[in-house]
Image (cartoon, rainbow, N blue to C red; front, side, top):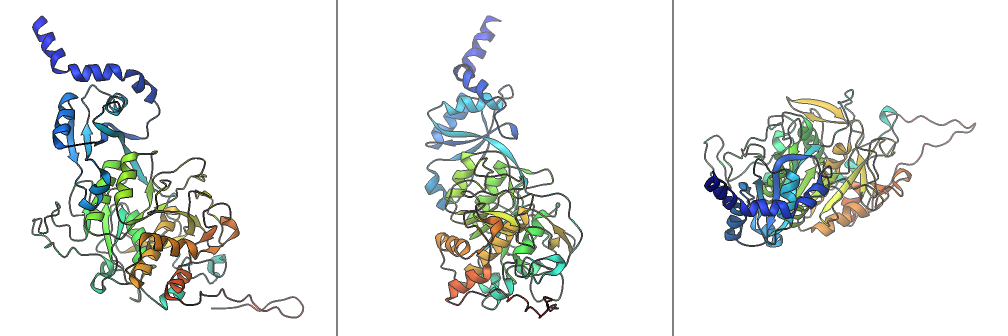
Amino acid sequence: MTSEAKVTISSHGKLDRALQSSSRAAQALKGQLNEHKPGEVIVKVKQSDGLQQELTSDYNLEVIEKFDLPANMMRGMQGDLLHLRLPVDVTTEQGLAMLRQDQRVAYAETNDILHAIDNGLPNDLNPKLWGLDNQGQGGGTVDADIDGPEAWRTSVGKNQSQGGPLIAVIDTGIDVAHPDLTANLWTNPGEIAGDGIDNDGNGTIDDVHGYNAIDGSGNPVDDVGHGSHCAGTIGAVGNNEQGVVGVQQNANMMAVKFLAKNGGTLADAVKAISYATKMGARVTSNSWGGGGYNQALKDVLENSPALHIFAAGNDKNNNDAKAAYPASYDLPNIIAVAATDKNDKLAGFSNYGLKTVDLGAPGVDIYSTTPGGNYQSYNGTSMACPHVAGAAGLLLATDPSLSNDQLRELLLGTTDKIPALEGKTVTGGRLNIGSAIAKLSGQEPPQPPAPPPANEGGCFNKIFG
C-alpha cells in the first residue's frame, strides 16, 4: 500500500503541486467563466513542440487538437494554439488557474459556447426587399435603404468565374442546393466532388463548397436555416426571375459551418476562421456571438487578413458599457453592425455603442433564402451583418486592390446619417452602398428622392409605383 501511494504521488506530483499553488486563483474564477465546454481549454504556448509535450505530460493533458493555422496567421501568433482536455478530476477553473501561472503558457482560455445572433421565430413572409430599395412599401419611409439599385448601375458584383472576391459565410452552413444560391457559391478548384479523397491536400475531404468545423468534413449542410438566410442577403442570384436578390447579384460565397441548432464552440469557430483564411476568404460574415473576452479568438481574428463583419447583438445593450464579443474586439479588421428598420429607426432589439458599434444596416423584416428552396423573413442584427458583408464584396468586385483600411473607410465614410443612430454608433449612420460605390468610382453620390409636391389647400399628390 505504501509503495503504491508513493508511485501515485510521484507520477502526478507536478500536477498536484500546480493545483495546490493555484487553488486560490481557481477559487476566484468560480462563477466568473463564460458559458463553455467543461474540462476543455484553449492554450497558446510560447515555444516549441518539445515544450508542448513537456507541458501536457506534466499536467496529464490530452491534446484534442493543435490548430492548423495558415502560415500568414501563424506569423503574428508567435506560438502554437492548442485545444486541450483536462484530467477528469480537474475542473475548468482549476485547469485555467494552473495553466495561467505556468511560464510556458502565453494564455489559457475557456472553450466558449457561441450562438447565432437571432431574434425569435421568422415573421410573416414579405417579398419586398425594402432594405435594398425602400419605396415606402408596408408603411416604410422612402429611401430608408442602402441604395442597392443605385450601386448596381456601376457594379452587380462578380462570381467565382468572373474573379469575384471570396466571401466566407461563417454560420450554420448554407443550403448549397438552393436554386437562388447555387450559381453564386464558391467551388473548390482543387477538389473532385464525391471521390472521398483530399485532392488539394488542405486537410478536408470533398470540401467542394466549404467546410464543416463541427465534424471536420467538407459538408457544410445548413440544418438550421440561419446561414442560408444570411447568404441570400449577401448574394442571392440576381435577374433570375425567382425569389430574391442579394446585395451582390453575382457573388462568390463559401459555406463555413461551425454552428448547430444549439450553438457552437469557440474551438470550432477558430477552425472555421482558419479554414476561411487558408482558402483565401477576403471578407467573412459573422452573425454570431456569445461568451466574454477570449484572447484566443481575438488573436485568431487579428491575425487573419480578412475583413470580418460582425453582428452587434440583439440584447438592447450598449456595447460601450457592456462589451458583446466578438463584435466588441477593438481590431481594425472588425466592423460591428447594428440593425435598423424600414423607417430608419434603431431596431428595438439591437445593441448599439457610440465607440464600439460602427454603423447600422437593415435588420427588421428581412426576406431571404432558407433551406429547401424556401424564403422567409427574419429579424436581427444577424440580418444587418450580411448587408454590410455583401456591400464589402461589391466594393471589392469593383476594385480588388482595396485594403481592409480602405474598405472600412468606404463603408463607414459614406453612411446616411440618421437621427436614430446619432450618438448610438461610431458613424451615426446607416449603410449606403450606392454612396460607397459612387465614391470609389469618382461619381456623384445618389441623391435622395424629392418630397412629394404640395397642392394648394394643403393636400398633397399621392405617388404610386
